[in-house]
Image (cartoon, rainbow, N blue to C red):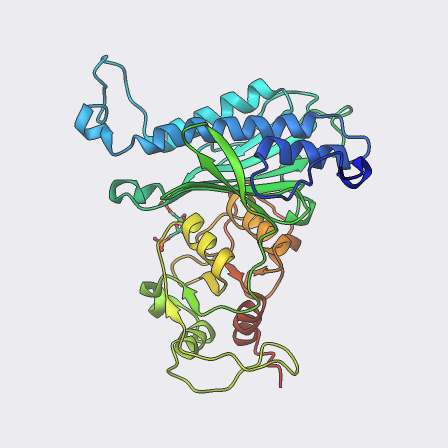
Length: 356
Ligand code: AFP
């Protein structure tokens, strides 16, 4: 029989088949001084996600069963899925007791939750909701920050207006053909797939690494005429209309164009494909949306955190997303994320700083 000392006492956290709960717990055991609050907070977020998932999965039945419109068969008012998802997250986070401040895409102002709780949670409860009617992938995105002085101060907006590099956990959930929860607590980026029969997330994509370069670009090209000449030049180049040879970094192989085009119009779906397959996703500023369309605190920052933890990059075209100091809860930002080489080349087009 094998020596018992050769068998690890705790299962490694990054083994396929580990449940999300186990994974989070093992991270906690590895963190000296952990109190369990963070673990409990993440478990509550996972509970909210499973509740939202069950409703999203039934979305197609709504019309058939008469559950949409203003009232359901019981005569009760029925909420839209995004309002429902928002309320689930608010209620579950409140019950966790660990959340001092909440910022949501669905709330005009940040909401104080629990006076002495340590954490701030910022989320988009149901991103891509305009895609629901056509059964296209949609998602939930969130970021968790730690309040600087939970014992001394009441939660306030300043707790949320922190640069993304201070994020302690970020994640998104893609309600696609399967439900995938991608999470980082600062120790890599890991993907968990929901087993709907059991209602549990299992580690299916341990330690995701974004390929150094990809073969697809993802952008709403309908905005072409509104882009700056620099971004238009990048778009022409990536489609192979301009044969300029561009290297992402000194001594690197040039990128080969044309790239294929992929655009869903749901950030979570477009970002997830880019995270797994590599390439580039961009929602740049344009003459109509001068600061871009996507929101810094609960869309760009969590995505940037997840991509960097997976070896990818995220910029606003010039600067690292995670360095931006926010000034408003619902601030918008141009967002470019993906493979290191592809994002570097986009940046070269925008800044004019070419690598020779
Ligand atoms: P909706 O939530 O209104 O569907 O918006 C989705 C979104 O915020 C984001 O998920 C997409 O990446 C982006 O907008 C798509 O925007 P365009 O429709 O302008 O391409």
